[in-house]
Image (cartoon, rainbow, N blue to C red):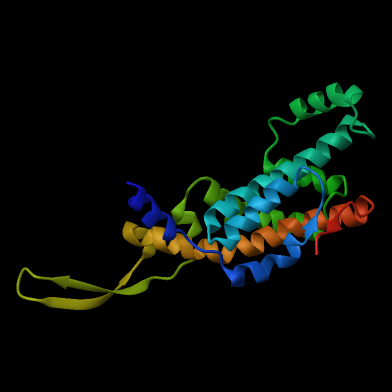
Length: 213
């Protein structure tokens, strides 16, 4: 059993230097708040080619950031001290039913995000956030073009032909192409969301961040 475990362990995905180079700038910045642990996990997922996991965590990061900032503003508190816990708790309760679309609209009203960021979030909700969150391969792969595959038959001798196969109509291909698509989506989605955090803390919150390197 130990040898089986060792064999399985060495087959685990190794870090990707190319992916790390792509997001090194994000890795070098630390906000020193509750967002950092999620950001670090997303970066680790991307570096180890766990792109669908990175997308799901980026969904979480975006919603957590918008909720936290909006709640703090709605609570009216100026300092995170024990005496203000009740106000924060009440503000969170009032936001329990808010969708990401609701948070996006409210963040724009409060100048937490720009109009450009607001519109991009709306697009990513439809093209990345919802499809991956709902596990909808049909939505994730809806823009993929049919591919040419080899079809054969042995019933009357060996016969084969090249046919066009719709990925969404052939389940064995869905998993592979969804993983390939996630590789394209995860980095751009995370870098976009992380840029929102960076601009907020830099421009609106007196540069509350630091560089590790």
